Image 1 (cartoon, rainbow, N blue to C red):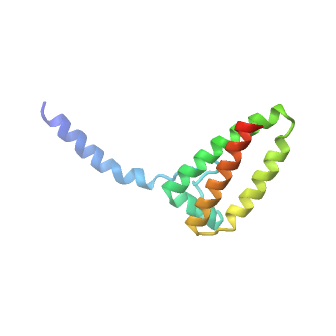
Image 2 (spheres, rainbow, N blue to C red):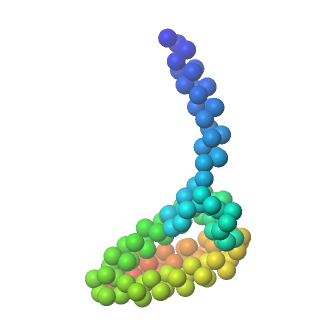
Length: 116
């Protein structure tokens, strides 16, 4: 049955384009309807690197919310996140600007989680 490995390769090659068609999901929002989203979110959905940053930031944000709950600071963390989202969204399609916003916000959240 030497044809099985070859058949597996043929199937994998046929399926590869389908993986690129499937809509991605950033951690903080769905990319299923990316065309109806604002420019910054469309750019994030179109970039695997920005999506990865979004997922990492979402993880830090969840940790910060958990930490904030111990100190009755949850609303403060949420309010700062809402302001950050507005600021990130002002970047529009500028990937470098979006990336900078993610890096700075992750540092802020990490610092909060580790030092509050």
